[in-house]
Structure formats: structure tokens, C-alpha cells
Length: 318
Ligand code: ADP
Ligand code: MG
View (cartoon, rainbow, N blue to C red):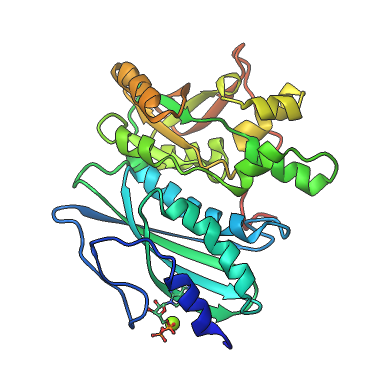
């Protein structure tokens, strides 16, 4: 498309440099030196306007989030990120938009030393697809299929903020900037995921809602889970914005887009996990346990069965 090359030049001028990138943006393909003895971990996620972010989302926030959701997948594998590629579909070759997009993208790529090594730029409805590549020591990846009966179920950070922001945006009315920040700028839990590789049995990042994502983990592991919905961590912003405890629980248990880690670990690892949380600065909360069977059963603190008002977000539902 017209201006494609000036856009690519702008992207190229800002990439993070790494010694393992032999040839980055500019040739027909990138040339990379994989980590000796490491296993390559690859993930890809697409963000479409109106589906994965509200239409009024700032370009810088789209740039951040496009990379963040991918890094979150690597975090959930316990991997260290190295490289990424970026496929951009833009309605117009808008240099102001691309510079703002790169501001957000770069703000996350730089601290995590992720090098953008290539991509594709086309004209079309706004859509951003990122693929990330990272490494993990052989046999150390945090998979979904490793949960064992008797494990604790843990969650990082707090749940429900992003879903609350989305609900506020959809309904109009009061909008909380702290909640909106959780929706626009999720913080991939990379340090936590990497530290958990020697303690956790299984992990998944919470993108569709805790109960839905924990359900994926249980299915892969051939086990069931019990969750105490009153134990789910809530931020001060969520408590402030939404007073009704029933609404809290639904947002925390089923709201997507928080990009926290949900992981299982043996009970004897509790002290080690608490130490990892302190060291990484990300709080973790025990919210349930793994039992024999299938499915996820949610209960309130008094032991009563609890069912959400709606299930986790499913792009192809209804
Ligand atoms: P080709 O026709 O060989 O696919 P392109 O013109 O699509 O080449 O891309 C030229 C170079 O710019 C390639 O190295 C490609 O990886 C890179 N590139 C194109 N678009 C992007 C993008 N959005 N982000 C990063 N690199 C890009
Ligand atoms: Mg191309």
C-alpha cells in the first residue's frame, strides 16, 4: 500500500537490539540464533478492533496490548521472550498512528528485551497480529496438562478489573481510569511465570475468565477443580467501582482480559511460592484445589454451590 515502506522504516528505526538477531527487518526473512540447548516456545495472538479492544482505544494502548497478550502466553509457559513479528492491517498508512502505536509497543518490548524482527503491513480493517518466540529449559515449560490431584490452585494479581472496565465502557456512565488501564495495558507476568517453572505443575493465563481457563487446564490434565469464589482476589479499584458482591464474583470468576496467571502446585510448595511472589512483587492467592473427576465447581465461602450469571467469553457463542 502507498507509504508502506516509510511505515516499515519507522518501525525498523525503533526496534530493540539483541545479539542473537543476525538479520532483522529489511530482508525477505529474519535470521536468528536460537539459544543453545533451549526449547523454542512460540505463540501468536490477533487483536481486532471492536472484538478485542473498544473502538476508542488509543493507538499506544493497542501497541502495548498486542504485545502484552502474547507475552502473557509465554509467561504462562514459564518462558523467557526473545523475538516477535508483527502483522499490521491498517485502513490508511497513518504515520501519526503508527508512531503512537510504536510508543506503546516499545514501552513493553524494551524492558523485556523483545526484538521485533519482521512482519507484514497491509491495507484493511484495523487488525494487529503479533507472534512471539522465547525459550525454556527442556522439560521445564509450564503446560496445561500437568495438574495433579491434591494440588492447590493459585491466581496472581487480581481478577475482574478488565471485565469491569469493559462493562463500564459498554454501558456508558461512570468510567474508572484505573480499571480501564487494566483493560488497555495488561502486565504480562513474565518474572512470576519463569520463577514458577520448578514449583508449579501446570499453568494458564486468564484471558477468557478464570473458570473457563481453569476448565481448559483441568480438561488437559484429566482432573477437576474446586474454586472458592469468595477467595478470588479483587483490586481496590474494583471494590470501589462496584459495591455489589454478587457482581464482583461474576466479574472475577468469569471476566476475561486480566492476563493473570492461574497455576497449580503441590501443597508442599506453598512457602516457596509465597517467596517467589514476594521476590517478583506480584501477589498470589490460593483460590481452590485440584480433585479427581472433571469440570470446575465454584462455591462461595460458606460452601454453597455458585453458578455465574454468564460463562466465560466465547467469540463464537451466540
Ligand atoms: P516481502 O515482500 O518480502 O514480504 P515486505 O515488503 O512485506 O517484504 O517487508 C519488508 C521487510 O519489512 C521484511 O523484512 C518484513 O519482515 C518487514 N516488515 C514488514 N512489515 C512489518 C511490520 N509491520 N513490522 C515489522 N517488520 C515488518
Ligand atoms: Mg510481506
